[in-house]
Image 1 (cartoon, helix red, strand yellow):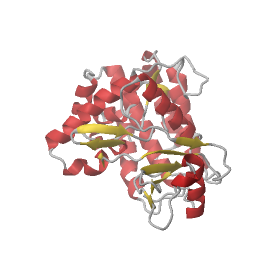
Image 2: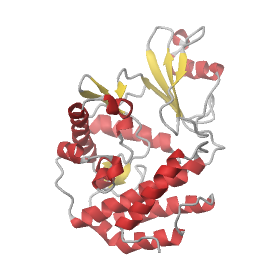
Image 3: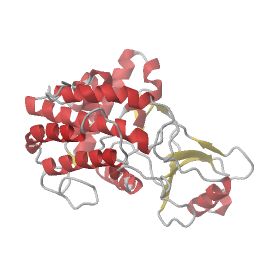
Image 4: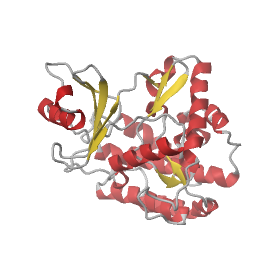
Length: 328
């Protein structure tokens, strides 16, 4: 997938980065040792074969001159911290980090190396799988997501803190950042921005029910799940994690917006009961937040076609309708 946030590097720069991570004796020679992994919109990732034959992945943060959305700042640091938390506190399989460099001496952005995971991306293969197998994976994902959500934080908000005791204050601030990003770049979301703010304020009291900060991935879609032989082999891409409400997880999105698929297998694996009234309202707010991002990020990523924008705009309208606001 193409995006202006992808920070591609020359073979010479890649070799220097490999040498720093693994030593001169493992730097590849010749041609054909690096392939860009095309799945994903934000970071560039390379599959690299080292001189000794080992396959690794190099992930590089966006270049500093490219403007990203507010919540995406420092995303690689968030991912590294999240990987450490999940490895330390759960049994959920995540990549090891072989080496991370934030010095910007060899590259103008943060980067890290991890082992290559020889498995299928569930987001790519799901449509080719029998329904029972696909549902089994989603049930496993629900159980894994519940385990991740079992990690408690000292307050709501960024992993690095400072924590806030109010989820209402944190989440409404997150949405305000997204709206301000859209206004700054003049993105047409199909609604007056202040109308969206009014809808958020009208339902914000539903957020007060959330009192315990939990580690949430937020971006844990099937496309961030690697599967092999009927099991989840690895969960990747942890750069949007924060301490918040587990209902903000992607697996619950389908409870309110059918386009995100049937949430039943995920919820069964998660062992989550049917949503209560306040929970449904919160999940609708989280869907609204997601659709705002999907519309606004198309400008920040420099998309060359309107496919994502055209898909997300009517679903943003649907979220507004679920929250009681329709067009005149």
